[in-house]
Figure (tube, rainbow, N blue to C red):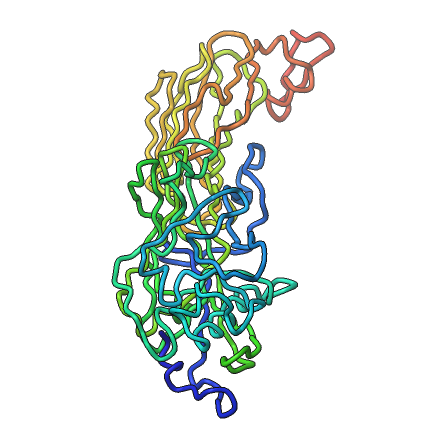
Length: 440
């Protein structure tokens, strides 16, 4: 419950609230906010060093509402994909857990909201939902989950830690992922009110099929975040206006997750109801797994010649830190490592003994880092086409590469121009392939 609500007179004698209400868009589990506005796209091989956008796995915008009445609680709402939702009882009472929009009746028809909410608190919740839809063509029609922790003039402590939002793992509704060992990134929008009192302390968990949580980033406090921007909202009912509510977007993760499905759980670690008022919307889970590319730096080589092989690990476009990825590349039959390897990947470790046919690499991508590389030489003693592709490699936390091929043949079999180029400056070939003349 925001302290400002106790000071506002009823309609006719009301004044504009003294403390500006604050709305923040927050992704739980991230210590820092990273880029925004991801298009829906997936990483694919072929653009080493150029980050691609993360791909959206799941999005809940709470718009699957048949009509403005009756007003629903979160546990009465079903997402467009059939997803059901749960929360602790404290976040489903006292004007918490309501599926709210500015376009609903300001007098709050039906017992669900009015019996434990109150008209002023209800109208303030409608304004927060409007702010979260401020970038849309119809902000009054935007729905969000609001949490006012009490009713007019009466704060109710929810206790902590308590679950505010959870997908339905109990109903076997975990979200299918593109595969195992993916880097997951989450964003969501939050509006915060009453930041002059108790702040929400929010964090996200990923849930396995048994409901066992694993952290998705760290706890955040959305109040006072530098990413906020103001959205002007009109008055409604007993809530005065116009006034500004700040809005921003934060990201949680990225976290390397071993499973092939996951549930989502939002926890509020603030026990007080004096303040702690907020709303959330647009919960988005993304696959932010980096892309692995590899390439032979020569298309043709002689038997026994050292051929540079480069691996490029490219981040996704939000450039969040990606810690703990790894891969093992088994070279094509007849090809071996020829010399020491090097890498500029943070905490990078390359295991590739000279003469071996296996290359194992572990490393990180730091926050803000677009890509890093691993380089080493390989060689083959016999003629042939040597293709190194996704079938040669196992990955953890990376998307697999495309094929790369080098042709190993004796020099006498090379086209004239290519042989001359390899021989170096001042070398040229006569018409017959075996006749090589070097000028002084």
